[in-house]
Image (cartoon, rainbow, N blue to C red):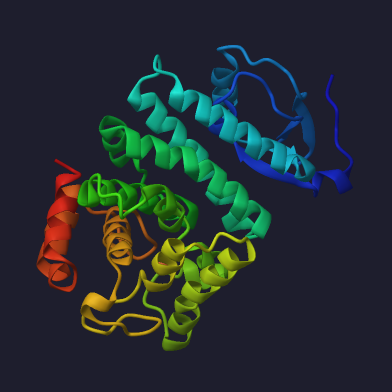
Length: 321
Ligand SMILES: [Fe+2]
């Protein structure tokens, strides 16, 4: 039976990525599908058990997004976290499948906070990031799979997921087992470094071409805006603060917001910046098409390596070997 939602209720729905739904076996809350005419119908009720063909059937319809009620956002987030944690700890599941699952879950929660940067959603994102960090820290193989899996969309939430993965994998390689550097505390900072971009108007964020001085000023505000959003969600550890505030600083003092120089810039922020540059070069943007890994690393060596730590860059290159 098709159940149409009243218009007022339809306005209260949040989109979810279909791939994230299949991290668990049963439906954590009522799910709705949008019909071509714009109406919403109940797709599956809470507790519905999915069979192996459910995903295939949705793919055949070309359905990539389903909808949940806004009130169900917290329980859906809990479902993601529990499914992900269970999956990561299951020794029968391959590192490649685990890597795929964390990428889907991270993308999903970061998309949510990019669309609506509320403190509650930021806290929920950090709960998903925790098992992701656990996987990267625990398994070299999974970290390598994740590095290979990153996609090439330029949307802010995809960029944030990719930078988080690259930066964390690099930090793991660079710091090794050094107990002074707790990757679990760093992880959220890498994934949420650009959180403030959620407040930049889309016409500036996606502008095809160079920004004017005034637009650049608005864009650069994302550093302080991100800092403020994290402060509101009580996620501002010293590590996260450092990464968010310093990830656009440059050795020669031409960066922002403080124009810091050389060794004053924290290694965590340098790691994030390196991952940020690489991700920008290898993803499709309104103003350029993506470079291959080889081309991007070559370009970085020729142009920005003097501005980053040579030793750090060497470790970064090793991530792709
Ligand atoms: Fe940034």
